Image 1 (tube, rainbow, N blue to C red):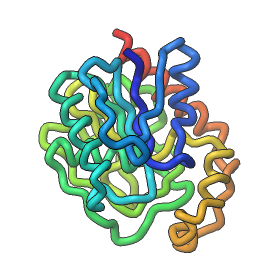
Image 2 (image 1 turned 180 degrees about the horizontal axis):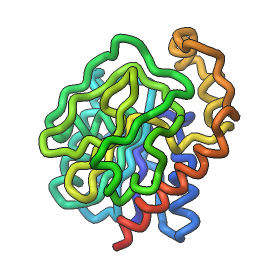
Image 3 (image 1 turned 60 degrees about the vertical axis):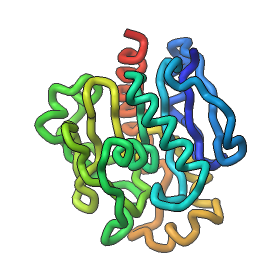
Image 4 (image 1 turned 180 degrees about the vertical axis):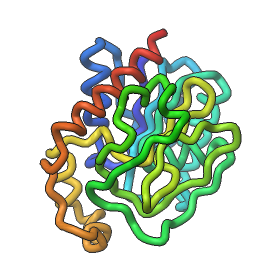
Length: 228
């Protein structure tokens, strides 16, 4: 069965994740539960799940978000690989028993992450530089799930990446974005309040070339993982 990509708003697409899947001929499709809640999904038969970002909080009382949480929990129980990005990482962490809470201040724009020791031997992260500048857009973070490997951190947000077991990954930062996606986010009304809290104007092209390399590295290896 295809890779199921849970999307939370139309302006947060899979971006470079979809590029890596397409390059390897891996079938995928979007699941938009905010529009189609109640649709039965055989997630235990999916090749993998990807859970994208969004402007809402994991803690918001949204029935379709709780339904998505149940699907992610079922996938975990079935051994289906799960990749969560930003909101998706927070949802995955919550399904693994972690707490999600607001940060002291939002992390929006280009900031460095530092790889921790476990990342040096991680199937996805090994081979990246000890410090990489990546794109961020979030105001909440999560505690590290019990039993997870803590892979990356930043000055503003300690939990930037984790792996749980061999096939569950959460990425708080946004390696999937292209300059076009960043421009789209900056135009979206749902993000206007966030944008006013950015410490500096956002240049979508600032680190785009290296971000593309990082995305191809991470998502290419993730695709290799889900086809093993």
